[in-house]
Length: 202
Ligand SMILES: Nc1ncnc2c1ncn2[C@@H]1O[C@H](COP(=O)(O)OP(=O)(O)O)[C@@H](O)[C@H]1O
Ligand SMILES: [Mg+2]
Image (cartoon, rainbow, N blue to C red):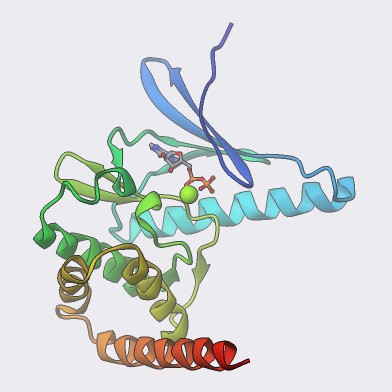
């Protein structure tokens, strides 16, 4: 019998680790949603699975360190296993300057015309000295400054000031659109502060 080891159960997908012909493979399986009509649920899951694999594949071929989608079926993506630690588990253990590499990782993704939309430490794996980006479930094809700035914002909220200063240095180095994205981030943050203030006045 084939043994599947479930290593994670997220809001949409289960992640299994399986050894196939001596190689460790990750299987990301999108679960059924019982509250949806069967046909709609199936169409949605097929669409999202195909889209995630397509974007992951584009990211990989554009030089982003990420898994390679090896096999794609209706509801599953088979990809190589990145044996390491989720960044959120080792945040305080790594040197601040290492965050430059993570900034570069995001720049490579944005340069490829992709925004991640869930760029948080839980979706980055540290393997040896290298960082890998995973979970393209919410990713979109976009070169929009506002959407790019949201990727920066999510990371900014997850790490400390010193870590972020290295991160943004890595992102901005020889990046022709970094100024536009950083300016946009400042606008989003101002908007956020304004909203917070007006809420507290109520
Ligand atoms: N290719 C991979 N290699 C190693 N671990 C992985 C891989 N893909 C997913 N994981 C593990 O499974 C977890 C959940 O996968 P993820 O794609 O982020 O799904 P979710 O959409 O549920 O967040 C990750 O945080 C990571 O620990
Ligand atoms: Mg995830």
